[in-house]
Image (cartoon, rainbow, N blue to C red; front, side, top):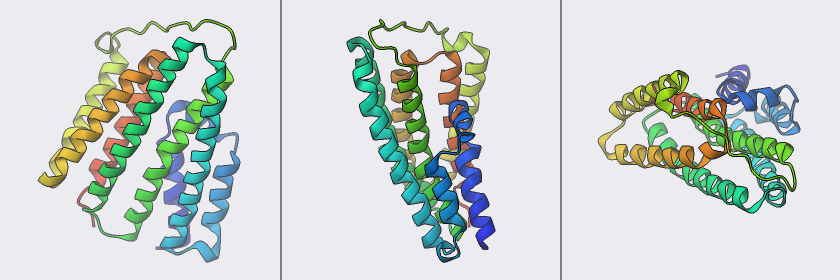
Length: 231
């Protein structure tokens, strides 16, 4: 596989599945993304190992950005809001860990260089997205003002939400059917972790934000369902 295909795969994965808030941020040409593009284009990093290293360096960079944003956010929040964010962050971390095991289970069923790169990308993307969410929360924080809870309709009363959940469940079932029996418990645990994250994050977002969270999960499960068993 040539370098150009490596580069297209990585950038398409990173930019193509991000939720709306993250996509808007792409236009700002973040230095972490720019550095990754430069790294991916280097002739001495054209091997599979080199390409994975470029994405892993970007993942570490976004993890640092995530941690910095998290530390900046804490003092800006009133106590009740801070507890909501802490619950959301803990749930996100549990989801990240559960999904790491799910990725390993899915990509263990594949063969080929492109899937090594795809797995590296799918480890990078959630960290990048969460860093952008926390950066946005820092920008939106208003010191000294009480939290204003957002009133969301039940998902069953929101046609977009209900449709997104339908799609998510469809790809969940498709992925489950393609996984070896021994790996299905890993999928169940990951999906339970995602549900806990959705429940923890919902009080912090509006209806569009809830759709973004579900839509990101749809994209993840769709991609994994299309990947499982390939060679």
